[in-house]
Picture 1 (tube, rainbow, N blue to C red):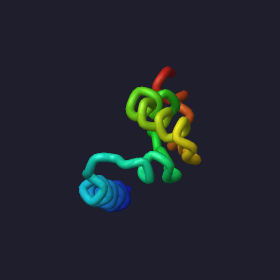
Picture 2: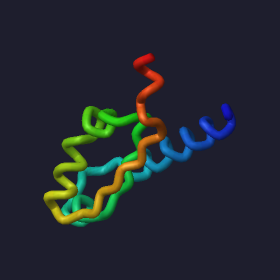
Picture 3: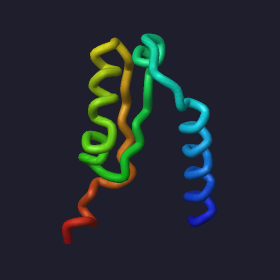
Picture 4: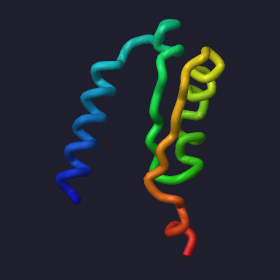
Length: 73
């Protein structure tokens, strides 16, 4: 499992590095997938960006890795 996490982390780091520039109109209108560990992290982590993209006409999808139930036993 560690290798998978490391690989995904490295891919995300590289993607973020490659995309580090001011957004223009085309960026706001481009579709996006937001991956969150559990519900509410997408809102707290990048809700503003998601809202701006949707209001600009982008298709934004969310993927939740867990349902969050394990954090509240």
